[in-house]
Image (cartoon, rainbow, N blue to C red):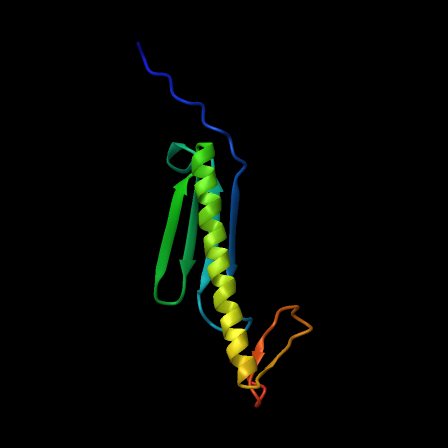
Amino acid sequence: MEKKKKPVMKIEPMDEMKFLNLPGKESAASLGIRISPQIREWNAYAIYISDCDDAIRLHGSLGSIESRKNAINKFDTMISMLIKARNHIVFECRKKELKIFNKTDQRNLIINPSKEII
């Protein structure tokens, strides 16, 4: 008797890339995310992180409920750690009385007393 394969849950594709540095900084530092029903013939995701010297790729399956739960956990863990690191840097700058502002860009930039972005 031939074993039946579990049906693969279809997923809509996503393919996005953003540069990580502030405008004017010359570097290829970027973050890319690809979610595809066609990577290696199953639903999968890949995260590409690069700076001017190094690059890494994280990837995994999205073909089952369990693999999707695991992928969500990985994303949540990365987001949590990035927020923690960002908050640490902001706290350290505030502790050293560095001002944090940028109304135009709607992001918090860390500015030193000489007004240079650090």
